[in-house]
Amino acid sequence: MKFADRMSNLGTETAFEVLAKAKKLEAEGKSIIHLEIGEPDFPTPQNICDAAIKSIQAGDTHYTASAGIPEVRNSISKYISRTRGIDVHPDEVVMTPGAKPIMFFAILALVNEGDEVIYPNPGFPIYESMIKFVGGVPVPVKLEETRNFAFNIEDFKKLITPKTKMVIINTPQNPTGGILTESEIRQIAEILKDREDIWILSDEIYSRLIFQGDHFSITQIPGFRDRTIILDGFSKTYAMTGWRAGYGVMNVDLAKIIAQLMTNSNSCTNSMVQKACIEAYEGPQDSVEVMKEEFRVRRDIIVEGLNSIKGFSCIVPLGAFYAFPNISKTGLSSKELNDKLLYEGGVASLAGTSFGEFGEGYLRFSYANSRENIKEAIRRIKKVV
Image 1 (tube, one colour):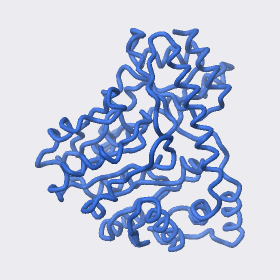
Image 2 (image 1 turned 30 degrees about the horizontal axis):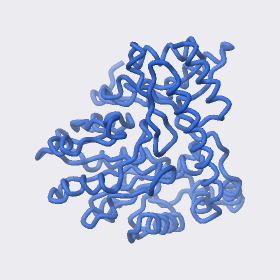
Image 3 (image 1 turned 180 degrees about the vertical axis):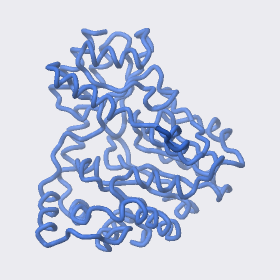
């Protein structure tokens, strides 16, 4: 069977592949502790579920505008205005089924064949996949453990060329759990300020899951508001991964193009899900704080546990819900140890190389699982190692 040439450039998200392997082992009777998938294990808050049910009962079961219903775009614009301290108009918001389409559409709309895109590595694998898919040139900037998984600003500066079309930043980060501080983001902005032809895709999907300090967006810096696409959504903050609810915030001209891509691909985001998202932002926020505090406790448990394992060392992640220990002293590659833990220990994790070449020597553990399961996973890892 002959496929289009571009399909050979398309990558994947290894978390789903490992999940499938783990589920197969479970079906065969093996006990598996799932620390591979980046998904909150909490239920979606009841008020959000109720809003969706009410929406269905009210007959909200038809097409909407491709960019989203006016009410949800208004709600998102108010939320971003409040949390980022910038003035956002509803026309600058595009609602999508999950946040990934914003990543895909932004790169598709702005990156020509041969254009260079700088992106974090180790980083979310779909960045590199989409850059390659559209014929762009992926240019990785290394996140360094010694810098709490920030990157060397001088190294970043050297990567910028006349062909650079986009820079992707992600804070808090997947897979490292690191954050970019306001100072670091301002340094990035200082380097980019005179290159107005360079777009910034700012992945802020974990912005509500920060354990130390406050979230800072590059859009808060004068001159960067109109050249930045904020990527955000509801999946992580409100345990709504299966609802597929995300959005982008960008200048009006680009928003029209992204909405056109929505028309050509998805038509629109699920109508009752959009109504539920309004309730998410405008209803009670207690559940978010409860979940974040529980993640903080679990983080401390897993970091202490990982640091007690011979050959492991793990710095404390400041955001998201991932631990990214250095396992180079075990003498095994990331893939070797990842497979060993799954098949011998019944612990599903992800090899650091699932997130790029600079992830070698690391594993990613999602601590979106119970305290008891995290402790049991540590016992199993110790036994295997």
